[in-house]
Length: 421
Image (cartoon, rainbow, N blue to C red):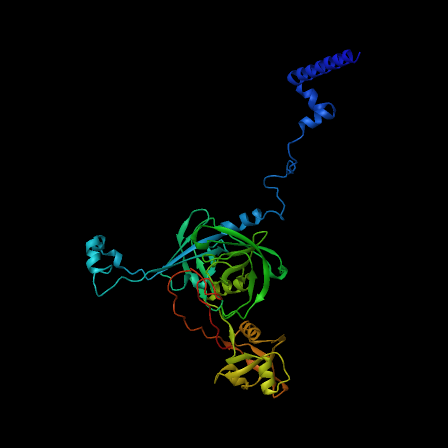
């Protein structure tokens, strides 16, 4: 009896397996859409998370992609090639003879060695359909020839309209039709923590976009420029980025990349850009007058430090103490004396020498300003006619190009200087 039952069971299983084989061969969809067993056969081998249909392509959110802002700004960022000291020796056809060059040098005479040609590589930003370009002054300083290469492949010569060494800005002009221009952003709505993009030509590899955030605003006391009010960012800024654009996620210009803190010449996550507000003021002044005119009072100021406060028994803890007064200058004519502490100009408070420098510079020469000061621990107000700031002394041109920082200056190794106010 048991044996007969076992034979019937085996036959039933055999017929069932045969039916499953036939169905799987001829109608596999029956197994995929019917029953739990069919669902198990159609399940993936491993659970993978895929993007939902319709969310690929150019519909990425601003939190995951900054492509739209980059594509908006990149066409207006150009490569700037400047050269100087080439000489005219190459016009001599005898220099084509290697034997002649071996005996007589590149200039044709042992007594006249070849001139030392130098070149700079940097970036710039087209800000006007008229062809005006903002870049760094150190990119084009002393250049004999300047060539600009656009992102669309066009190249053309550029001329310097003017420069401002005290902010390290220069204005170039090119003559080409249908120029892409960048949209200027607003600094009053810019905050620490905002995402920014740095666009330029680092190390000559071609146009590159890097991303970071604004680390700080109003950075000064860096010893890079005379007038400092930098945007600090951790977006990678490397040699060759000088003069390029720092933009927001919508592609609007926030600053001109100008400096890095580096001990190796490469980015360490601390870069500085000149705010668009400063750049715009310099641009308009240079286009209008060819130069930048600033106010000046003729004093040598120093910050009021705790040591100075203790040494002189001062009650004033902030401001700019007058260490020296230029004879015959505006401050001298107004009766300001060494030892006075400047604490305000018109309605603006003076906390330190940097604030004094910036406030006075913004006053139009010939304008009368009300200066608030402390003399022998007593307040005193003085009327002062602001003079015109003299041009800074020319610095010796650096040898070589934009090839690396000095650890705490800009990315061409020039750490700037500041003079008397």
